[in-house]
Length: 463
Image (cartoon, rainbow, N blue to C red; front, side, top):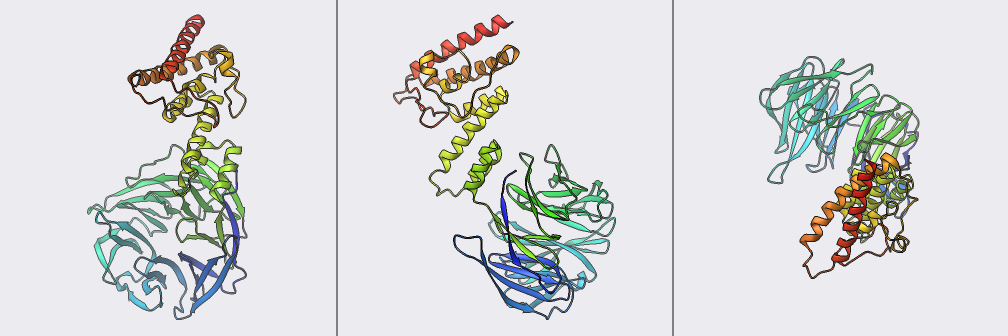
């Protein structure tokens, strides 16, 4: 485990009970049980994890319980579920733009902002009205019907768009409804023992679906895209995807995990959290009935340092790739982590996997050969350095390691032979920075051929 986020209090002991949240840019909307809509401006102090919090508006005109909020900053609108109907307000003035008369009796809605092939953004909305699903799209400051209503097997309790499907959680089961004109319905699996089903949209267009303390990821066909389900330490109440992390609100704390690799990253203790929302990448708010916290990301550099110490190279690599392209060290750091990853695979005796990574990286073959005992001249071998002590190999393990090396060196040899007449020197990279590399292709070929001969003899002797 490592620290990915730091919880920072934003609102404390709010006198009104919080019922929903929405956020965009520097703004946080809080919907309350009495129907007050509170708009806060949240400005981060430069260089610290402190925030200047200002109540910009307190709108009491809603005067009804605010059940759900959704901000579409691109259209400057606020979509809300008030007293079982869908209302649309201007995001800047809170003036009402429209009410969906057809959606009277609504209990839930889900919005989806799509980017069309022409680059335009298109807002779609699905509204649950009793045992029906109504579909709308936004145009000219109005919601228009997208297609006819769909009949549902029960009253939807949770739902999210999944490309051109909608994943719906009912009291007992999850279903996938295709938006293909026919409205084909696919039954997925039971909801489990949890009181409320949970469907959460993911950043890549898929959905995370909860079954008790497990979460699976589905695509628009309803097919599971992960080998294994995520296993939480309690039943999630709500979820938010902040790649590479998935953040779940549990009854007593917030838990942060990753899909690939499957890791428990961090547990953040908060007092009875209930809600979570995001204003975009790296801006996440969590709320209880009377408190709001912001989950502030720990710097990527600090996270990478922690992960490398813990030998979590795959996650460190994902984070390194997310660094700003203007960071001059980005490319070098990615390469360094990949070498550490390949070295660690070798130490775990995953020889084939290790050789594949070294081959892709263009690591100097002599540095790879040096991982093995008695294959390089002693004087040259002394010049090579490695991140950690090398594993002791013997018997069947050593034979398996030699076979992986034979495949790797055969591939490298073929590549070098094709470049033998090139005037430019060989461009291999060191496994560890500062270690010398061999630039002469002929010399490299000689070492590879000698090593291959030794490997073949060893494998033959073992057999």
